[in-house]
Image 1 (cartoon, helix red, strand yellow):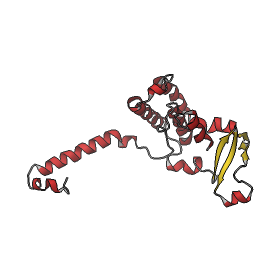
Image 2 (cartoon, one colour):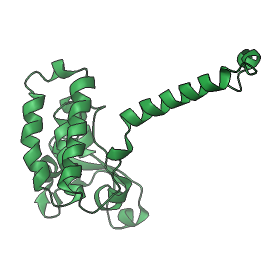
Image 3 (cartoon, helix red, strand yellow):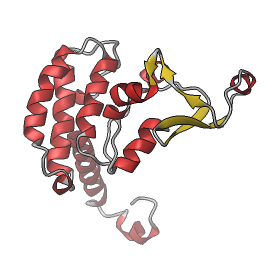
Image 4 (cartoon, one colour):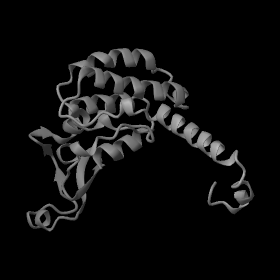
Length: 196
């Protein structure tokens, strides 16, 4: 407001600065209500049970009161899902495991725009991937693009089929280790996210 020339004539009014102070205080109060410093937990390899439950509760309440597509998941009892997930959250033994539970929790909303993203501290461990793209083609996982010259030199080229990941059949691996954590609104979207 201070820089807006439309308000220049008010700058000398004694009520101007107190009004600006009230506006700024209200903006701080609204910001702190929605992003309270109390909920900004520093990263740790394993959060406390209270921190984990607080995070799950915040996610549950954000969706409960703001998610507009519950009609798209009529079989989902969000409150029962929350109560069942409390035990899974308490049973986690690392922050990564905890975030995976939150991702699976949010994925039940079946919405490609609603999800849980891992903190940057976990990106090397959980988000690193080879420099290639894949797709599910007729129940087979096929390499569609390769950006790593070393992989190309080793024979990983577009058209190669991936049959196993860490010793598990690739379809089983994706269904168990990837798909449950993907937020997607359609079966096609889920397939693209899980196999891509």
